[in-house]
Image 1 (cartoon, helix red, strand yellow):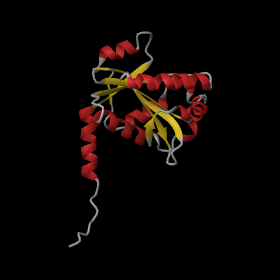
Image 2 (cartoon, helix red, strand yellow):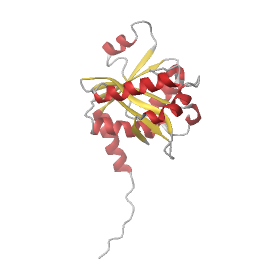
Image 3 (cartoon, rainbow, N blue to C red):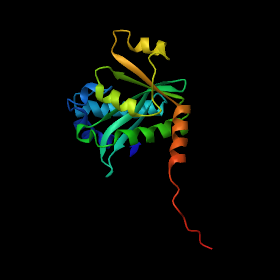
Image 4 (tube, rainbow, N blue to C red):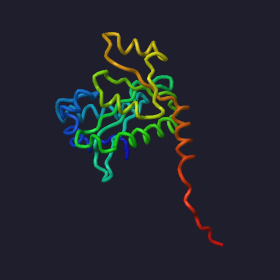
Length: 186
């Protein structure tokens, strides 16, 4: 479902990213394949330097369909940025990609808090965030970050995922998974 970013995926990802339904919501925009290659190379280098974490989202056949990133990592916190190509919208890729990424961030990379800034006009992303049981609206609980995001106007809502909330969610999911009958051999 996820893999580290590779330059070989850039052509496919670029074509998906420039779709008008996707492009306005991408953090690192590119106006050509060459520029996207350059930005991807910078992203790979920034990850090597511990500045961000970036993965390519794959479909069930291993084809690149989008990216998921943790930007601005500082003191165990960072900002999530995700985009998926329009042909894959509404097909169930967003939630499993986030779960796989959150597992890596919280249990392998020691991230404590993931913030999501979502434009108030991006209704689709806001609805998707509110469907996730371990996500909370943080406009009032993190007023310093909320005000910083909206210094130039009331543009964003701030959501957060705390490691403890995510951990409790995973424990509840495991507890609710039925144990299949197994036959023990003697």
